[in-house]
Length: 203
Ligand SMILES: [Zn+2]
Image 1 (cartoon, helix red, strand yellow):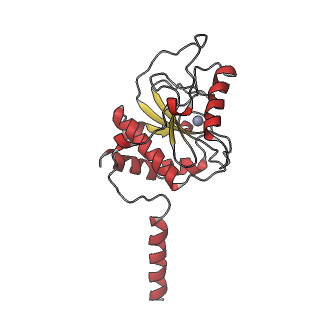
Image 2: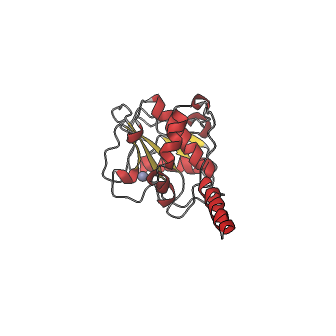
Image 3: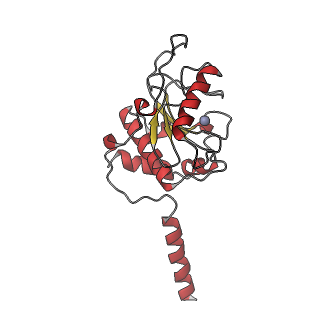
């Protein structure tokens, strides 16, 4: 009986130490690798596209792409396609988000951050730094690498713009939407994401 109880305790400890628990490591956020707009072929806006007024960042807000992203999908084509769709179909100045993260955890610059992003829902994205994880996390699973890269990017932006922890949230916290999807939102709900961001902000 005692042995069984010990086994259950050990098993519980092992299980609770899995699931995105990252060993506390010192990370130099200034060394965070980001694929720049020039690297992926971002196209500057034509003169006919109206530029928005610039804004100051006060929030970091997390999104998902909302469409399933198969592993063999070409990320660069997707970024270029999203930019072109945003302009031609939505009349937005650019890709709606400032940074995007792919399935492998690579980070890409998108809309220049001095301009507010865009949204199909009813919150005002002025003042928000928008991060989008490519894919649909109602259906897909956020990998440990993606979780860690999302946390590092969030921490880097929050430090750079002096965003307090309580202003790091997700789309769902501001508007009627499923975004950023269940498998991202659960880490915001249980506090583990903000905990990791906090650790990264104060190494
Ligand atoms: Zn969203």
